[in-house]
Image: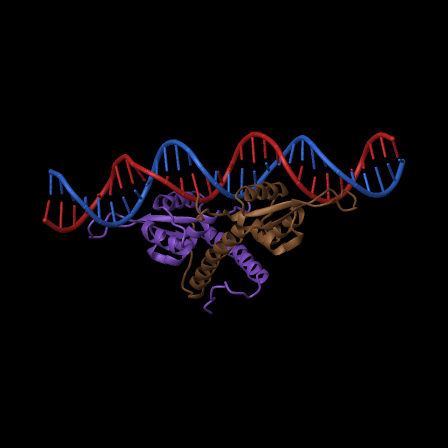
Length: 119
Length: 119
DNA sequence: CCATATCTCCAACATTGTATGTATAATGGA
DNA sequence: TCCATTATACATACAATGTTGGAGATATGG
């Protein structure tokens, strides 16, 4: 279980959401951000919480419970932020993702490639 | 049974490799391409075959057995290519991956780590 | 005809992803 | 005050994907 610990697809999206939300990252906002990233594929809120738990187990993120806000239903939120390990992990994942995108776009750019027909 | 069938991380890499190898895509070359994409993380050859099987079950790729080549150990190879469904799937996956990369790079500012886009 | 190289494929297990349900804590109105 | 409602967190079970390690298959060269 070295630094070669690989992130799954959904874990990457959650990590990305936490990163981009900076100090506003808690369950609901993270869920919204993940759905925006994965569009048009939906994501369940429960899936986000489970994944946050697992990422925290792996020390890729850290959380702290806030004070409740005075809103209807304003329960205490748990805010998340990336650990240094998490930053390293998402950087590596992004590098792989970018290589993948570039290869796909390049291949399609050269024209001439047609998918097989379903027989 | 929508197009919302999601691809895992490794499946995306294998699909990308098959796409980019065009008519040279078989187990060994696909494995090499996947390792290049996922660098520095290694990938087992067996993992590639298992994933190819699953992608074929899902009709995202098609295969055909070639004639053996006259080389030492030149066993018959199984060549793969994307189906139309596979093409749609990888396009959607690439769109999500690109959004993810863009968010990460934007959040970090145009700082020190961004690998060249070569465009 | 055997040693070795290239390649495919299987079975078992580990990790991740998803669906669905439960729990807690706040507000505001009857 | 009590309860319906809202917002949020957390739990559990199951499905899908990822990984490992090795077992055959089929070719060549000696």
